[in-house]
Amino acid sequence: MKRRYLKDVTTLPDYILQVDFVSGSRLLLDMKPYLDKIRFLSLADKNVWSSAVTNGIFVRFGDVELSHDEILSMAEQEH
Image (cartoon, rainbow, N blue to C red):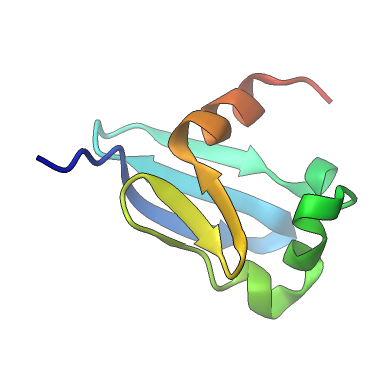
């Protein structure tokens, strides 16, 4: 049995990541505070940003990958 946590992912203007969970919950994650981190530098490229896809567990933007746990952890952090 393959577990799925993420239903869909959408990139919104101003680097807001919309994550829809299979539970029906929706999270809007502001990614701007992360764009200066080495790992996320490529997301500043609009083509990379708009390439977000999910397999139900991870969100991928080309070579950048975020797990559902990491997304939740990022949402809990203060900037």
